[in-house]
Image (tube, rainbow, N blue to C red):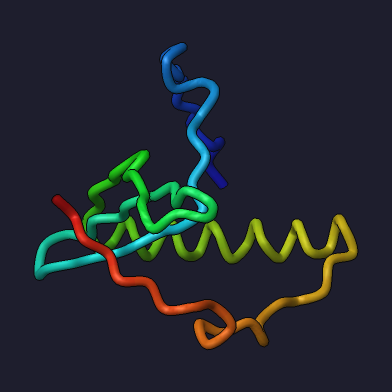
Length: 99
Protein backbone atom coordinates (compact mmCIF):
# COMPACT_ATOMS: atom_id res chain seq x y z
CA UNK A 1 0.00 0.00 0.00
CA UNK A 2 1.31 3.46 -0.89
CA UNK A 3 1.98 6.08 1.72
CA UNK A 4 -0.73 8.69 1.81
CA UNK A 5 0.52 11.90 0.23
CA UNK A 6 0.03 14.90 2.49
CA UNK A 7 -0.93 18.21 0.99
CA UNK A 8 -0.25 21.33 3.07
CA UNK A 9 -3.32 23.55 3.28
CA UNK A 10 -3.28 27.12 4.53
CA UNK A 11 -6.27 28.92 6.04
CA UNK A 12 -6.12 32.70 5.57
CA UNK A 13 -6.53 34.66 8.80
CA UNK A 14 -9.76 36.30 7.59
CA UNK A 15 -11.34 32.82 7.28
CA UNK A 16 -9.83 31.23 10.40
CA UNK A 17 -12.72 32.13 12.73
CA UNK A 18 -15.37 30.87 10.31
CA UNK A 19 -18.91 32.17 10.12
CA UNK A 20 -22.09 31.07 11.87
CA UNK A 21 -24.98 29.79 9.78
CA UNK A 22 -28.26 28.31 10.96
CA UNK A 23 -29.66 27.42 7.55
CA UNK A 24 -28.25 25.72 4.50
CA UNK A 25 -29.74 25.79 1.00
CA UNK A 26 -28.62 23.75 -1.99
CA UNK A 27 -29.41 24.43 -5.63
CA UNK A 28 -28.02 22.61 -8.64
CA UNK A 29 -27.88 22.38 -12.38
CA UNK A 30 -26.34 19.82 -14.73
CA UNK A 31 -22.75 20.85 -13.92
CA UNK A 32 -22.64 22.13 -10.34
CA UNK A 33 -24.17 22.45 -6.91
CA UNK A 34 -24.41 25.83 -5.17
CA UNK A 35 -24.46 25.58 -1.36
CA UNK A 36 -25.52 28.71 0.49
CA UNK A 37 -24.95 28.97 4.23
CA UNK A 38 -27.33 31.54 5.70
CA UNK A 39 -27.79 33.26 9.04
CA UNK A 40 -31.44 33.94 9.84
CA UNK A 41 -31.94 36.68 12.38
CA UNK A 42 -33.86 35.51 15.48
CA UNK A 43 -37.33 37.04 15.77
CA UNK A 44 -36.99 38.47 12.27
CA UNK A 45 -37.92 37.51 8.78
CA UNK A 46 -34.58 38.50 7.30
CA UNK A 47 -31.40 36.62 6.67
CA UNK A 48 -28.00 36.93 5.07
CA UNK A 49 -25.94 34.52 3.00
CA UNK A 50 -22.71 34.18 4.97
CA UNK A 51 -20.93 31.84 2.59
CA UNK A 52 -21.52 30.33 -0.86
CA UNK A 53 -19.66 27.25 -2.04
CA UNK A 54 -19.93 25.95 -5.61
CA UNK A 55 -19.05 22.29 -6.12
CA UNK A 56 -18.94 19.72 -8.90
CA UNK A 57 -21.45 16.87 -8.26
CA UNK A 58 -18.60 14.41 -7.65
CA UNK A 59 -17.27 16.66 -4.89
CA UNK A 60 -20.75 16.86 -3.35
CA UNK A 61 -20.78 13.05 -3.18
CA UNK A 62 -17.41 13.11 -1.39
CA UNK A 63 -18.64 15.82 0.98
CA UNK A 64 -21.80 13.85 1.85
CA UNK A 65 -19.73 10.71 2.51
CA UNK A 66 -17.25 12.63 4.67
CA UNK A 67 -20.02 14.33 6.66
CA UNK A 68 -21.84 11.03 7.21
CA UNK A 69 -18.65 9.37 8.49
CA UNK A 70 -17.82 12.30 10.77
CA UNK A 71 -21.37 12.50 12.13
CA UNK A 72 -21.30 8.79 12.97
CA UNK A 73 -17.95 9.27 14.76
CA UNK A 74 -19.38 12.29 16.62
CA UNK A 75 -22.43 10.31 17.74
CA UNK A 76 -20.21 7.46 18.93
CA UNK A 77 -17.70 9.69 20.73
CA UNK A 78 -20.31 11.80 22.52
CA UNK A 79 -22.91 9.06 23.06
CA UNK A 80 -25.34 11.06 20.97
CA UNK A 81 -28.36 9.17 19.70
CA UNK A 82 -28.86 8.84 15.96
CA UNK A 83 -31.22 11.57 14.80
CA UNK A 84 -32.39 9.98 11.55
CA UNK A 85 -35.95 10.45 12.74
CA UNK A 86 -35.67 14.26 12.33
CA UNK A 87 -37.50 15.34 9.20
CA UNK A 88 -38.16 18.60 7.44
CA UNK A 89 -41.70 18.38 8.86
CA UNK A 90 -40.19 19.27 12.26
CA UNK A 91 -39.21 22.72 10.97
CA UNK A 92 -41.47 25.57 9.85
CA UNK A 93 -41.54 26.34 6.12
CA UNK A 94 -39.26 29.14 4.95
CA UNK A 95 -39.64 31.16 1.79
CA UNK A 96 -36.30 32.52 0.61
CA UNK A 97 -35.85 35.62 -1.54
CA UNK A 98 -32.38 36.33 -2.92
CA UNK A 99 -32.07 39.97 -3.99
